Image 1 (cartoon, rainbow, N blue to C red):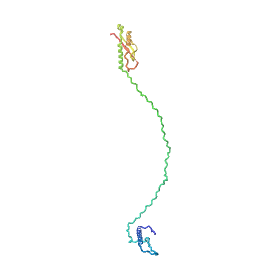
Image 2 (cartoon, rainbow, N blue to C red; image 1 turned 135 degrees about the vertical axis):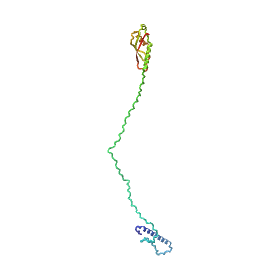
Image 3 (cartoon, rainbow, N blue to C red; image 1 turned 45 degrees about the vertical axis):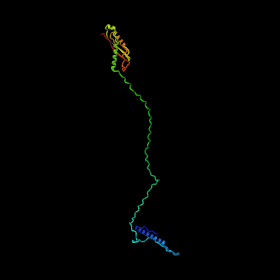
Image 4 (tube, rainbow, N blue to C red; image 1 turned 120 degrees about the vertical axis):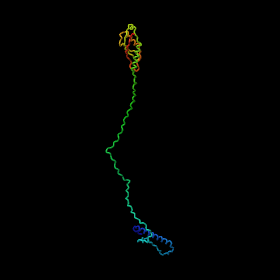
Length: 234
């Protein structure tokens, strides 16, 4: 069976209608053969039913068309074929630009130099100022001097021969005392003019010892005095 060129939409409907008619004839022929009961004489050639399946060469008339014409199908233009995507090969290598080479090679940082730790300094002994010495005040010194004079007056004795001859005068006696009030030296600084009175003044200083000691806050190991001893007749 020869197939004609691709039919248009209208011819397609005609082809469908012709195909349906041909199938109906085949079905009718098959039913007729099944229901046929006349014996067929042996030796007689059987009449064959020939069905022409050739397509219609001329389009059937409009009166034969039983199928209600539908909307004409519009030919949809097939989309243009897309070019196949180029898949990158797994073995394809990507060129990576080489890293810039520095003009001067970077030097490693210097290693820290460990400096020896100096030994700890010995502790500085705490210097405490010496206790401030108490200096005897002028009042304390004056009081000590008065007590010495009082002791001299207590031990003064008027010589009898000098009293008998009515000898009188002042003898200045110089002497030195240690811290215990003992007389360590004595002499006449100014004489009275009478030997009896001068000797009586030296003896008075010797009898008055030990004198009151100096104040504790008064520095020195020896102390010098010049005391006038007066001899008078009332």
